[in-house]
Length: 258
Ligand SMILES: [Fe+2]
Ligand SMILES: [Fe+2]
Image 1: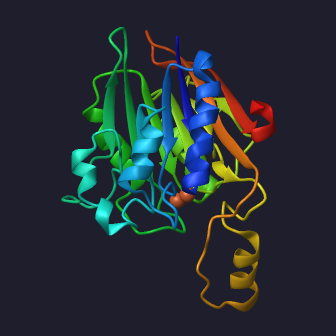
Image 2 (image 1 turned 30 degrees about the vertical axis):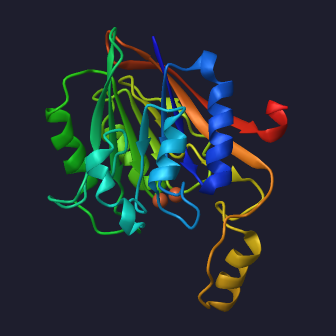
């Protein structure tokens, strides 16, 4: 059995520091760790230093609609093979949206795709998933589906049921309580949540988010300070069949690590 943890969007340097602690506390419960790092840099996006700090405890970093927020990181996608950008960006975009982890006794593919409902108009995520699967040579496959709409995410879960081990959502920064094993053996959850300040609006200082929405004026967002929460989900996969046996949600607060 392979136990795979996907930790949701890590927010800023506080989130990175706490994600490292939280993942270390789960060391005995997981074999492979994937973290979504699209908001891991202070001020959003991902940088070399935020990626390197997360990579101390994970195997793969996925991203999303903020993958190319930091210009200085754009070309790094070609250098850092452990950082994925959504696979449905146009041809010629730096980086890749799928990678293969080889642990010797088993292999695991990780795919990263962005949704298109209420999001940027990228290539059709369903067609993209189909295309990626034709090039993957293992039954153990995890998709981080970075999307806004639960309807699009659930449809992707059923679309890939029996074809991948797990479809796990990121992007909304809010963990959903709908984890399930679908009829053909694919684990599914609409969103695994975030790693950041719990008393915040998706990791952003609440008063700034309120100000922007109350007055509709431009506001420079800053990461909120305060107690951190790590949210994710662990999927257990039978590596002989690629089917998921179990999916469970994880939430770790600072007080849990004291
Ligand atoms: Fe995010
Ligand atoms: Fe996002």
